[in-house]
Image (cartoon, rainbow, N blue to C red; front, side, top):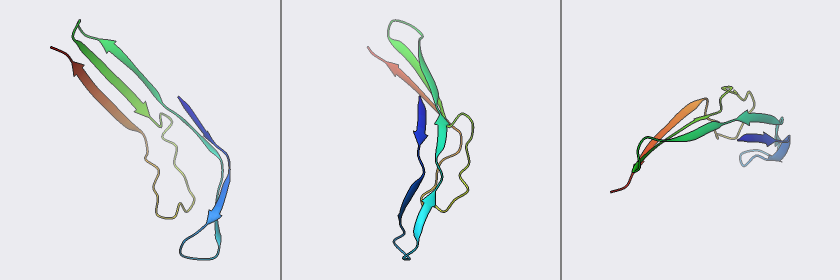
Length: 75
């Protein structure tokens, strides 16, 4: 999955100055692997390029690179 965001401008709740952020892109990669008839392993890496944002996001933080793992089984 590729996430693309264009530049943004919005009002800050704590001041009259608008908050401006540049556009950026983020690449996520994931997949699944069937271990058996009943069990599937799922994995994903979000923000594969470990994109860091250097602008004020009004106390909202963008996560760095992170890994997600899950195992589903049925019986």
